[in-house]
Image 1 (cartoon, helix red, strand yellow):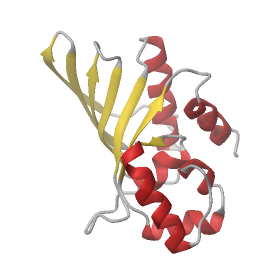
Image 2: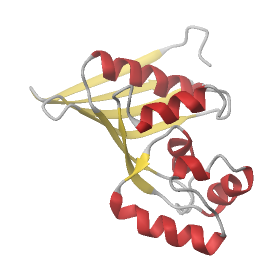
Image 3: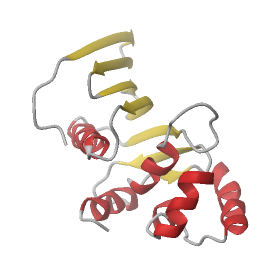
Image 4: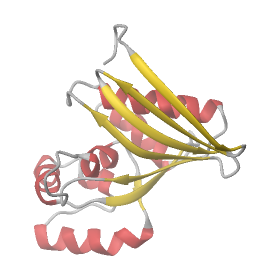
Length: 168
């Protein structure tokens, strides 16, 4: 997790009164987000944590979720890149699933087909990733997907993330 101060560059592009893009560069991570105020939606265009598995991504998302709720954003959407991307070290297909994001409906059939091929079970990606064997198969052979997170604290996405934070 982030406990110390570090240099940070932030660039904000105002595209309209209802739409801005925010780009953050640091020695720890790089992020690019679009905020759509009228639609109350944040689009995580790209987030790259340079040294994974240290809780930085979890902390960044948790901070984003707290801020999204504070400013009345209702959804966070993204492209969970990884697995099937050649030449990259993206693991969003795994990370966003374990953080509780839901796949868009148009990715559910390919997900079910993948589960059938790799003999994995779970009604959602979040549920499937709780199983260590399934988790490793998904990291190694899973695919990129588009998804969303409902920021309402009572939503299934929020409940999943809370469960994840508690170690479940």
